[in-house]
Image 1 (cartoon, rainbow, N blue to C red):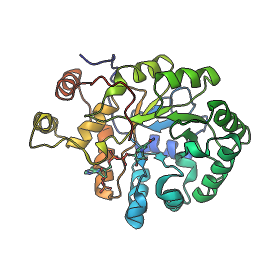
Image 2: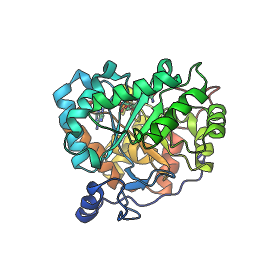
Image 3: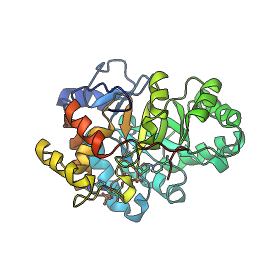
Image 4: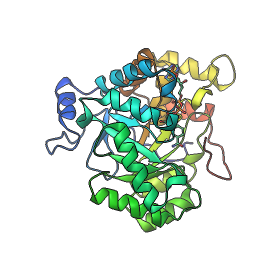
Length: 312
Ligand SMILES: NC(=O)c1ccc[n+]([C@@H]2O[C@H](COP(=O)([O-])OP(=O)(O)OC[C@H]3O[C@@H](n4cnc5c(N)ncnc54)[C@H](OP(=O)(O)O)[C@@H]3O)[C@@H](O)[C@H]2O)c1
C-alpha cells in the first residue's frame, strides 16, 4: 500500500493560450486558477510546473546547460533551482544567462549555505546570489541544510529580505519532521521543503511528506533520478519497471517523474544539460498514471524506513 493517500489529477499539457497567460507574469491576477501541468505552490499565489530544472554541476557544460535550461523554459518548465554552493556561484551565473530577457516567467529558487546562515551572512549571501543571477529578487530562498546556526537568525534574515522585496518567499531543504516542527513554530509561512526523493529513496513518505501535506507545504524532490543511480533496467525491480514503462508508452525517466509528482504537493527538479533529455523530462507532464500503476511501482520500489532523513 502507498504510504500516503494519493490524489491523482490527470496531467495534460497546457494549451497555447494557457501557456501564453502563464508566461505573461508569474504573479498576475488574471492567472488561470488551474492549469493541469502547473500547480499552485502550496499556499503561495503562484503557479509552478510540477517538473522543474535543477542546476547542480551545470558548470561542467556551460553552453549545453544554457541551451537546456532555455529549452525547458520554452516548454513551460518554469521552476529553476540553483544555489550559491553550485560551482561556487558559477551555476547562478549560468542561470542568469539562461533567463536573460525572460525573468518574469521564471519561478527562481536559490539556497543559502548553512555556513552563511547567520543573520548578517544570509543577507549578504542573498545579495551576492541576486547579483550573480542578474535579478533584483528571488521567488524562493531556501536554507540548503541545517547545521548549528539558530534558525531564528536565518529566518530573521529571510523576513528582512522579504520585506525588502529581495525574496518573495522562503523555505527549507533537508529538514526532517523535528526540524520542520521547529521551523513551523518560528514561521508557519515556510514555503517548501526540498528533499532527496527518487524511486530507490522514498523514506520521506514515512513522516516528512505526510507532515508537509498536513501543513500544506510543497515537497520538492531533488535528485529525482538518483543523481546517477537510476534503476538498472537489466536487473532487479528495474526490469519490471521497464515492462510497465513499455505498457504506458513512456520512457523510464518519464514514468519516474510522473510517479514522484503524483500528489499536488509534490514537485521534482531533475537536472539536465541536454536539450533532448529536457524534452523527454518535460513530456512527463503529459503522462497519466493510474492507481494500479502506482501500486505496481510501490511494490517494485518499496518505502524503506530510515533512522534519519537521507540526504546527498
Ligand atoms: N537541496 C539539496 O540538498 C539538493 C541536493 C542535490 C540536488 N539538488 C537539486 O536537485 C537537482 C537534481 O538533482 P541531481 O542533479 O542531483 O540529479 P538528478 O536530477 O537525479 O540526475 C541528474 C542526472 O540525470 C541525467 N539525466 C537527466 N535527464 C535525463 C534523461 N532524460 N535521460 C538520461 N539521463 C538524464 C543528467 O545527465 P544530463 O545532464 O546529461 O542530462 C544527470 O547526469 C540538482 O541539480 C539541484 O538543483 C538539491
